[in-house]
Length: 421
Image 1 (tube, rainbow, N blue to C red):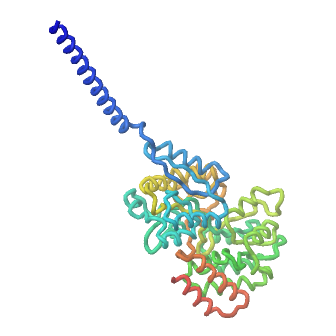
Image 2 (tube, rainbow, N blue to C red; image 1 turned 90 degrees about the vertical axis):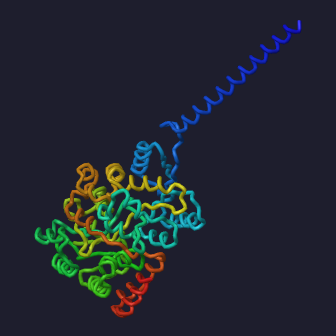
Image 3 (tube, rainbow, N blue to C red; image 1 turned 90 degrees about the horizontal axis):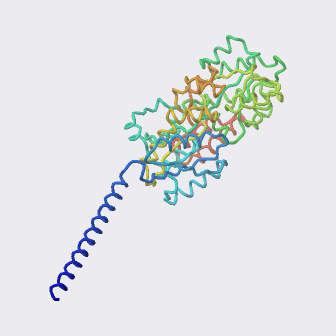
């Protein structure tokens, strides 16, 4: 009896040990499989990158983000749509960045913010990333690159550039003069002579229009006339020539972009300095304007056109800087810029695309030789951590001189001191 009881207990113990061993084995196998699954392709969660960028009323930005995400196993970009009000967006970003937040990894920035954000230590330099990727500055729009360069370090790449252009009446200007303008091989003195020569033809009242009211547009124009402040005195003197010329409107010191495009579209002016949007207005409203697209020529400005538009940078406090760079490299590179150009009509900041037939087909202006010449010769406004103060000084001093013709040396001295800070 005792023997039977002993055998029963032994059997029960054996079953228990077997079950225990089996459970441990299954647990180890499950753990091993979980570990292998974590490393297996396609099973890990992507690292999310937050991209702070303004709203886009074209499908381009989302299409570029989708293309990047589709090419990635490691990263996924999520677009944080900001306001299209530049001042509000600036303040929103500034509030976040100044608090040390990492809520955004990649930033879209107006060209004039780059110096401010770099000077404050809000964005990270990208020179090492560019070097490792084999990218050089001359592959990108020159004015955009300069706008994102602070104290010798590069902080940004172009998102999409904008630039100042010379528009002219191709039905008025002679073929010889038109060719000279399109080449860019002319001076503001040449432009003044042409303005005087052609004013009055085809019902025109004015020779040359530009933005000279005391606002940011005046800073842009001073940058262009002075060739990025290389010849401040000569540039201001030339502006005064245009301001007081008989072929200029008497109220030109109140001119902004709106007054400029309205008068050009209505056939009042032979020449006008403005941004690319003016071409779109003329093309899109052919039934409502006097001047038609086939009467319009496009040329570079004599010293190069000031760059506008937007740049891409990395939040210095981002925990995913490597991923942020991967996205910037894609979006500013040939693939991303081609999407922005063909699906959104934006100007490419990657220079090789200026010869791409699909890009040209998607943007009528790129078929104009003068426009392509202008894109290859862009200049930047001052890059400063206190850009607003610098621009205010330029506007005030330039407008004061242009209004009176007096105080040129004092204006030059004050502007030079401001941009040297």
